[in-house]
Length: 514
Image (tube, rainbow, N blue to C red):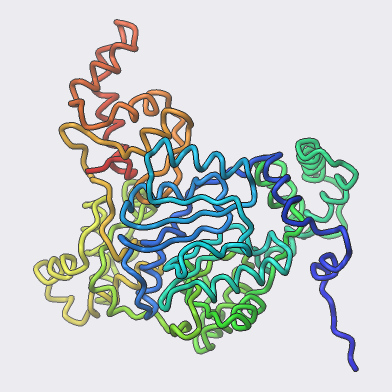
């Protein structure tokens, strides 16, 4: 009988003592806290959007049931719960320190719709029988193989009929370069047991490895670039990714096979621009164009040298593997994506489309220009279709439906689609209100989570000082007076302009609530 081949990652898992158990992993996270933050791609509203576009019927976001596995200190889960008060959230993590921090945050924010448990995911037996959305960010590649099986078994057992699993993981072929650096650094720190000392030693050695030196091949510069990236990484990233054991990338086809063993199915990538073929060479576009969906996903990873995936998964009996259905865009909301807004402000956007002979390109250009002018406002797609009908010139007669154009624009990263309107207001009101979460965060740290569920870093001390004041009780004049009181008399004349600028930026970046 032929002896099966064991890959190096699998071999490490089979050697006793080389893979930490759950308590050891918990101690590692307690020693160097994971720098958790929100992930907009894992928000139920976004997952519902992706699922809807690919033919599923996900649960209504407002009243959904959400489980986050490995919730850390609640940086991702608590902002969701804060904007969805009628939904129910459960977070679990093996780190006592992280769960204690998450519970303190939930209590401070008065969140009654969150349960936080210090528990291994395999032991989740007394929570709701079903979940509409399960989030597993930063888990799959960073736990032993039996825990990966437990994660997918949990999803298969606890996902509702139309439930959705979000799972992120490292992938080949791009991680082959990363893995070479990981193995060098792990060898260098193998005898160091203190986590902070391990991180410091790894950082110093990575910086040395990044320095120009003798190489056998010009392509070795790619590995030196990787060492430079590691040397600049945060302590959290170094400890819990680059030095983490296990940290096992997989090829996408292996991940898809693993899903199938648990009666789960791949739906799409959560980052919708990754779904399309943008950026591929003409030859590669032609090669992948007629491939079956799962084979195409693998070849997209080959073409892009992918390192990391964030995938949307469903139960196999829910019907995964469908193509994007542009007709489902009709009931959604749409906004110009922030990169498009920035490019337009710099005069770089849509220039090539202006001279195109293709009526579809010209029609989409006009819609994108209109949406960019409305930014950051989101509008129903029906309103876009109505605007197009009223403003379309005679040469637009051959253009495809606006739903198809917007679907393509979404895959190109030009617009953001959503099954529900965003919760932020695009213009400061007479008495501006920042979300309670943002006010609480700004008083304590330099990062805040906006109402698009994005993490923003605010280094400006004035901006951070203003945000806690935006509770709806102060007029613009009140805010100016409060800010001016902190300035020397000679600088107070500029207070009004400074406050107005900050309020405008707060609105653009989805920090203001109704």
